[in-house]
Structure formats: structure tokens, C-alpha cells
Length: 131
Image (cartoon, rainbow, N blue to C red):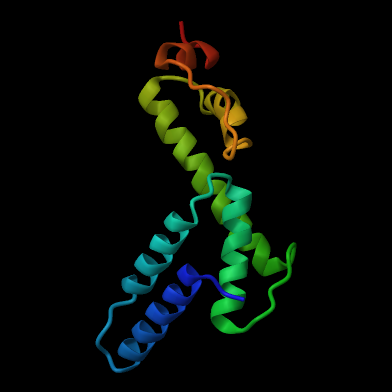
């Protein structure tokens, strides 16, 4: 059974594909629709994102890409690198090590549904080894 969000995505994709076949839609529209869907999906952890990408692919193309398959590995690696890139950018902005930042925020990443209490920016810097 599909959710309202999934039905909306499938309808958007169907319209875009029809328009694209007629030469009326640019390719980035598909990416925008998928990005909006993934934003609405609302999960933080890259493993959840990769799993949802596989599920959406299977739904969109009536395909069966299995977890831990070669194609799944591509999505998983891309989601992991996107997360690592975000950590690296924020770490560079804060002047801390990206691995230290990732370790510091890990308790929130793994507990999205029931996160620990917030901390101050100063405490985050301290947890990252910044004096």
C-alpha cells in the first residue's frame, strides 16, 4: 500500500516523464521532485535515506533491487558520502575535526525519534576538542 506522499511523488514523476518525452521538461525537475519527497520523508540517518531510495526506486520502476545488492551499494555509498560531506562542511566552518564533530552529534543521529537534550554551541565545540 502506498502513502499519500508516495502517490503524490508517483503522479509528479508520471507527469514529468510524459512531459519529458514530449520535450517539455528539464531533467532536473525529476531530481527536485525526489529531493522534496526525501525531505518530506524526514529521516536524518544516511542508512534510512539509502533504504528509502531503494524502496522508492522499486516503487517507481516496479523493480526489485535487493538490500546489499550492487545497485543498493551505490545508493548507500552516495548517502554516506553526502552525510560525510555535510559533517566536513560544518566542521570546517567551526574549525574542528570532522570525525570529532560526527562523534559528538552521533547520539542525536541515532535517536531522532527521542533525541538527547540539546547542548550549547560552546559545549559542542568542547566535545569536538576545540579549546
